[in-house]
Image (cartoon, rainbow, N blue to C red; front, top):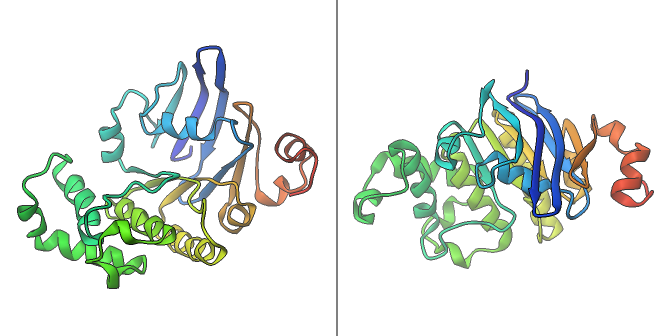
Length: 251
């Protein structure tokens, strides 16, 4: 049994079938990539997993227990964090404050915080946030306002904001979208280090260089359905993948 099991999940938007009997299993401690063409249902699936959307039918088990009935906050408290396609940071706050906010929420169980002065005075949280910024290579920018960062650094900051919550399962939606190759490679290296800590990752990604650099297993979505779930070396030459995802071209 995997850390995450998706069984027969369906989601419709009016007459559009976004997810059609989706099944997949994510093994603990692995990087599991989800690929597929635009409109395949990848982000919809992740939104169902974090409670932003409710599937019409189907079940999702996390550590063997039902996930879908939980609120987004309860899902986060259970150890699931998500990195969004567009980095979601507090642009007017410093990097240190950005990482302290989720650290505080994780400890106290709510983002409804006290005044900033009391939060920023929390020595233990401050030390934890600084250590996390060091882990992602941003400690020297701890007091820089987050809105001034490059896209690559914003992504690293968002990863630090997730990791400070000590997740067991990290969901990443296009983590290298819009990055230059150097930033992409730095992000790959960072994600490899995260994987070495035992955190399970589910990664949606269009960049095949990223996918094949990280994933131990790949699920391919097409028209809302998982058409193939296999090892990376078997995905490259799979004719179903080549037809559905790349129109017959090789990965």
